[in-house]
Amino acid sequence: STLKEYIPNFNYDEARITARLSANENPYGPAPKVIQAISEAVSSGNRYGHRDAATLIEMIAEKEGVSPEHIMLGPGSSDLLEKTAFVSFSHGGNIVSADPAYMSIVSTAKALGATWKPVGLTKDYAHDLDAMANAVDTETKLVYVCNPNNPTGSITDPVKLKSFCTSVSEKTPVFVDEAYLEFLDDAESHTMVGLVAEGKDVIVARTFSKIHGMAGLRIGYIVAQPERIKSITNKVRSTMGLCVTSLKGAIASMKEQKFLEDCKKRNAECRTFVTAEISKLGYDIIPSYTSFLIFPITMAGDAFMKGMYDEGVGIRVFNIADKPWCRVSMGTMEEMKYFVETFKKVTV
Ligand code: PLP
Image (tube, rainbow, N blue to C red; front, top):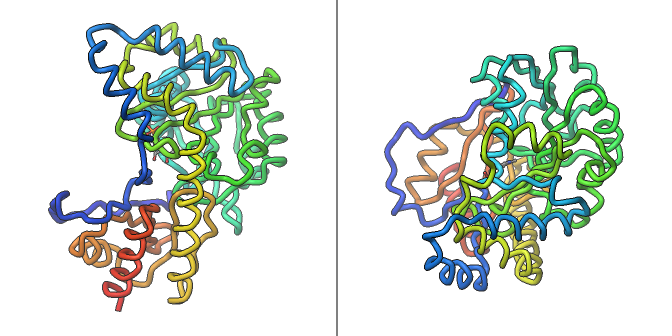
């Protein structure tokens, strides 16, 4: 892989981090009504949450235009990425994905003995769909597409992606991770969920961790063919990993349209501000459609990271194509101003 990550090799005190911009979290969530719903749900914590899971599944099915049998919930989409990997790669095989991409499913596949077939992004940081289709062979058990992509923040043309998913899913399931979908201006035209409704072997993952601001509460879902869902749930019980509090929170959050719109708007304002400020300093930021930005830096990766953390700014540094890149999540405007100020101070 060309993608490596700098892990801080120094001890830092979480309490000293004043701007936590390292994990693509939503600084505004959860919505006040979600907090209230969760507080009220605590007293029913003696009961398993199967009924609430069923309610949430029905709400999601309606929203996505599929039946409840097409939906599986998990404690975060991470869990569903892992479970899909468990059932797909228990006998080896290979996984095709972009490089760089979000590595969760690839890492699990590799841990299970599968081989990774990485395919570089195009010069516009989109998925190279022709090259990915060519990489699929008889041993390919799954193709993974992250759109918008993490860590690049870039998107792949939805019309091309639909045609790719349609043809490739004839040969092997295509997993489309849409964790950042809701930050797009025209999310509806970018989602691949319609292909599931059409009967294609496509698995779409979504999460309450990003736009809903519920990362620590752990709720995500996949939309897929009922047989795909059953191939997982016949082996692992799907609702046993879920908390009644988080389920109630997610149910409440689905009704908070105004809050979600507001998060999206504020995120976009921060993205515009940081892009302008950092570009002025001469850095090339990849145009982002998500809640984070990434750009190559000129300073050594570890020194930059340490400098930022010492000033209380948590970011992540990736090594892509032998260059260090700073990935910064959008916090509040105040945090982003502090990020820019600190960036200037650390990189002089
Ligand atoms: N997929 C992508 C692309 C992500 O960036 C993340 C988290 O950062 C996840 C999935 C996992 O999120 P969660 O398990 O919180 O749903």
